[in-house]
Length: 498
Image (cartoon, rainbow, N blue to C red; front, top):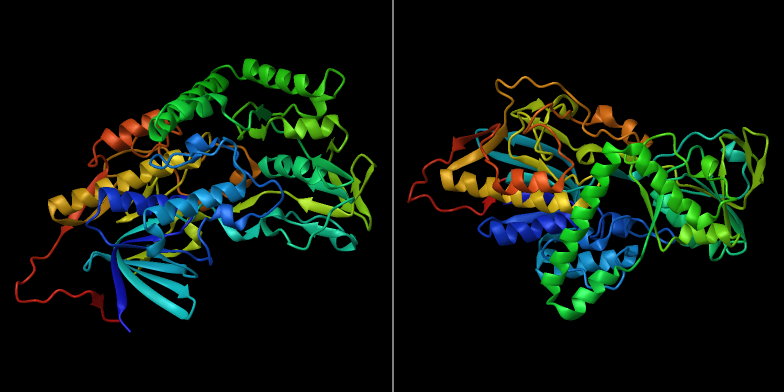
C-alpha cells in the first residue's frame, strides 16, 4: 500500500489542532492537510477529562477561537460545553473530514533531499506512515496516558477508592461519602464544590495554599453587547477587553506583588469572613503569577466552605491508613474516597522521536524559536499556549504564523524553513519561568529559550501580535532547499510508494 502524502500533517485534534485546520483552509488553501489524533474522539483535554465540575479556568471570550464567537451565556464554561464548541467548529468548517482517529504518532524523520517528513504512527489496523512537507504538532503539553501521582506511604492499605481526576471512573458513587481531595490547584478547586453537592463532606488537603480568585460565571457586559451588536463584533470587543484587562492585571502583579497579594487576600477575606484563617489556608508563600491563579466562578468554592459542605486543611501527609489519611500534625482525616488532584505530567510533543537526515534530535538541547519552532529543526512547529492567559490566544497566532511560513516558502520556490541561531550569542533560560510543581518537574525535558528575540518567549499577547502578524519571517530563519523543476512529461503522483 502507498504512503499518503500531505503538504501538512497536524498532530492532535484538540482545541489547537482544530484551530490549525481552520487557519490552513483560510490562509493556505492550496495546501492539503490531515489531522492525526491518537484518541478515538476530538476535543483533547475537553474530551479526556470527565471529573465532576470540569470547566475552563479562562474566560471563553479568550479561550474561544478568534474566528468563532462564543455565544453561550456562561463565560466560565463547563467541559461539555467547550467540547461541543470545538466539535461544532470542526463540523461547521469541514475540519472534521480531515481527522484520522486512533492514529498515535511515534516517530518523524526529516529528509533534506526530499524536503519532507516521514511520519510513523500506530493506526487502528497497525503501523501506518504519512509523508508531508511541514509537520505541525498540536498535541498539548501533558501525558494523556499518565497523570502525576506521588508515592504516598501505605496507599495500598486504604480500603476506600483512590481516584486520579485524569482517569475518572464512571461508576464512582460518592453520595453521602467522606471525600478528601489532595491538591490546591485548578483541578482541586473545581472538584471540591462540585463533589460537595452530593458528598457528606469534602476536605481539600493541601501542602501549601494557592491564590484563589472569584469571578462571575457570566459576563454581564458580554451578554449585554451580544443582544445589541452582531455576534462577531460583540465577541471581538469582549475578547479585546478581557485580553487588555488580563495583561494589565498581570503586569501590575509583577510590578507591585505585595499590593496585588494584599488585594487578592482581601477578596478571599470578604468571601469567608474575618474569623477564617486566611493566613494558613489561602496565603501562598510565592508572589501572584509565579504560578497560575486559580479561578472559581461565582465563588463556588468559598460558598461550599461557608455552608460547611467543604473545608480546607493545610498539612503534609505522613501516610495513608485503612480509613483515611494520617497527617504530619498527628491529625487523621477520615475518607471513603481520596481524589489525588496532584497534577499533570508534562510531555514535550507527545514524546515523538524526531530525526533529521538520520541523526536523532535532542529537543531539550535546542532553543525555542518564537515560542513554536526549534533551532536547526526544519519545517516543524508546535502549538504551545500562554501560561498567564488563555491557551488559544497563542495557538491562534501560532497557526497564522505557520501559514505565513508556508506561503513564504511557496512564493520563493523554497521547501525548507529552519530556525538558525547563527552569530547570535544566547544565554539559555528555562522554557517556562513558572514555579508550579508540574512545570519545575519537567523543564529538563523542554527546549531552552534565549535571552533575546526571536528566541525569547514574551508571554504577552500584544507583543506577539506585533511580532507574529507583522514582524519579519526572515529573522533567525533560513529559507532553503529549492523545489526541483518538474519535467512537463513527468506525471504528477498523488502517492509515494511505501
